[in-house]
Image (tube, rainbow, N blue to C red):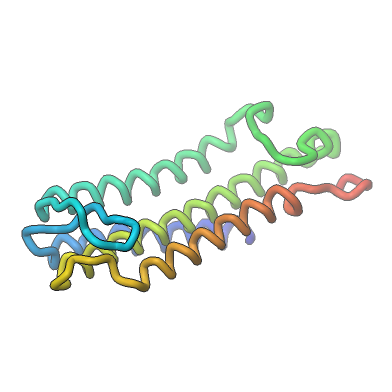
Length: 169
């Protein structure tokens, strides 16, 4: 994914995740399930203020962590960057392209994390507003899709994205 597109997707998912916290603050009841067993049944509860505070800090923290990593990548010594064929990238004079790709990948990983965070917020709101307090079934589907997408991204990054052909391209 081109860096500008990755940046746009990251910003969009960050805004949506933060907006979901705002909606949660407006619609959550006074008692909110905040921890769930493997089957999705609640086993710990919080106040609305506690849940909203956690969701806000969690959402902002994840987004800030990835934004910081993206910014830091430009100044990070290449010795700390772990990608296949790194020395070949440097020897071919492609350090700037290498850093651009790392930043774009971090933005995509951040967007993927934002989608998970957004789904957690939406699921907690739905669980809190339901009679049972259970996590909705759709959340497990979203979690599985997120896990599959993230693992696929890791494999593509590790096996394909940073490989150079013998000509150094």
